[in-house]
Image (cartoon, rainbow, N blue to C red):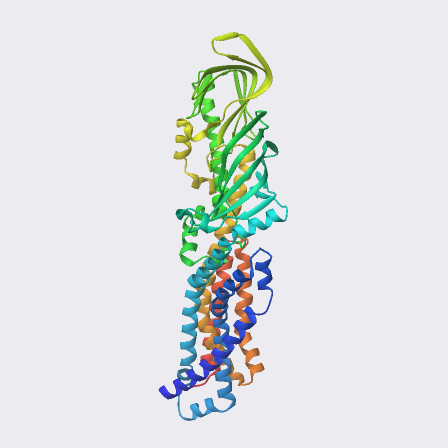
Length: 549
């Protein structure tokens, strides 16, 4: 039997190798791939590097297909040339003859398991590393084409000229993992929602690209600039100002299909680790901070809740004390409105204390320049009166006034309430915190996205497991069908091998479509393992009913 096993193994290995090479060349060299990367701004060198990683990916994806075809044509040719008949005449059990196909199936299953779960994701990271290294070139190409660099639809930057700073000109600590672009003739615009925050220009700007972390970030250093603050209606000149760090999206978006099994299991256990969910959670964190801002204002101001109609906000730069005649908040957006307001403003390093009075004040939470650190913005409106403490004789009247921004994280009571809040509740349908209606709509979007990812991840994990398990039965079935139908010719073998292959492909595609729709629950899992069970049942029927011993 060893000689027989070796013979079939050798024939399958030859067919497997030729088929795998042919399919891999067809996939990699078939065209269209290079254009994908070229459109993202990658050069010829980078595209060549990407192809180096695409070859092993294609090899791994084609391994089960090549193994199926090899088993089918090897045993089909053996049957057509009466070699299987000779084995039966010699009293050899046909089930034992199929052992080499079982061994090939086991090898293909193991390769599929480690390949799809670890090797392909690792190579996908390599491709992303290439695009990450080329981010400065992609950004520079935008400026050279007259297009702005836009961050989250809030900050837009234009430049007349752009050049890369040679690595030899960089300090030693910035030579590994960092790149720099030097811009001249810079103009920028900053927006908050649909409102203009500020516009300005800078003689020169240095953009730092940091690729040392998991996600590439850029920092903009504006030098010798001028800006107009639209909210405060102030014109400013500065020698240096920094914006960032700003996370930037990659040219090739990562997908769940290219995450390794360990990461998928982590995502399933803790969905907040999913980048897109984390982005939405960041938005919801800000909304929850708005909620706690309102709640603390109520506690401090509203008499029915034990307040005394005054509140003090303080950080390292400013201290603002508010004395309030009336309080209400918008149930849709959460914006606070105060009536008959007196405000006392103190700023560090400035001995002048400013007193304000207005009929109306609005308070809301806005994004600050520091990442994930919102600021409390107080706008006085409707007959604003301004005076300097100690000199009440001179009163200046204004239509409106924006007070210095106060950091939310510096407010102990608000920040403590936020930190004690279990953010996992945001992902539950039974969320009971009475947040504002606009924020609830965004939370529902987060829940839908979470359910989509949860369903997709669950389907992806089961799909990969099923492919590894089903590969064994698929290859053995291919060998059995080759014997039964005597598929020794190439076209015949192709047709025969398509029977189990197409069946699994259709079943897994249907399962993936169900996985992309969370309302179907575990339907995708049932389809995946149902198809795998049918395949194994088919092997049993063919082996014990159609293949006689």
